[in-house]
Amino acid sequence: MRAEPVAARVAAACFAAAVLALPAAAGPVEHTLDDTRHCPRGRADGGAPLTAGEAVARALVLLPDGYCGPSRAVDGCDADAEHVDGSFRVYVHQYRLRDGRRDWSRLAHTYVILDRAGNCLAHIPGTDLFGRQ
Image 1 (cartoon, helix red, strand yellow):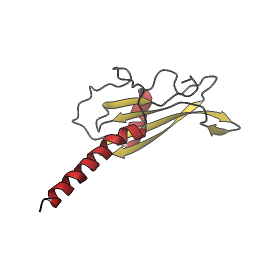
Image 2 (cartoon, rainbow, N blue to C red):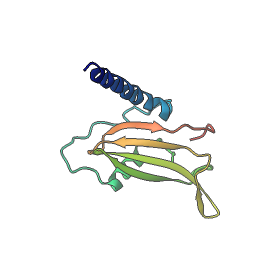
Image 3 (spheres, one colour):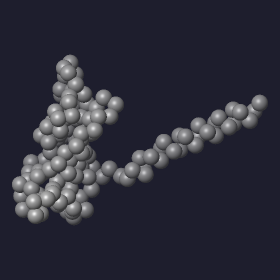
Image 4 (cartoon, helix red, strand yellow):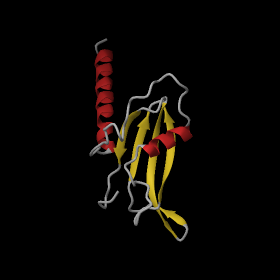
């Protein structure tokens, strides 16, 4: 009779350890953009939820000035919205045009996470490996 509660406690401890290890496996978040310009949270939650297109448009407005170019290194940005548990995770990646094709190599990316009303839950710039954004 004692083996069952011990096994349950061991299983619970293993599950807790696995859950706590997940953020470490995903890698560190070095910084977030958490100011009112890049991650505002003042929208009322009374209206219709955002669509994927509206989430992308909202996320692009929250990017740093000049992030999507045009500049010497960046011609534009691609964005993709993923609906997760009532919110949107918008992935934005810079590109440059080479021979009429989009080249994303050696450029920055960022994630903007929005609630159903368009409030920013997090704005997480990707690791900039080459010192440019």
